Image 1 (cartoon, rainbow, N blue to C red):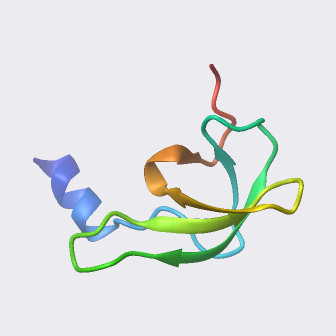
Image 2 (cartoon, one colour; image 1 turned 180 degrees about the vertical axis):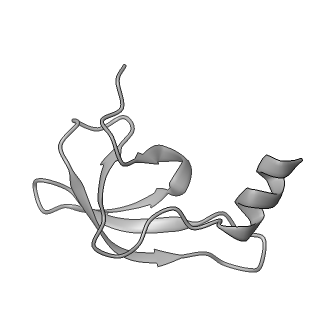
Length: 70
């Protein structure tokens, strides 16, 4: 129950400018450029730019501050 309360209080894990790694992509850092969610209960999504300069919209569940090992 405590974990649920914590997640509801601090739903957003990343901020604009953070370096992140994207699950399922080569493990080079990507940069968060925007964050958004639709509606009160929507899960956070982020717009990130990868190492090749390609922009992606990624849900928070697929992002990490450390490399994601296979």
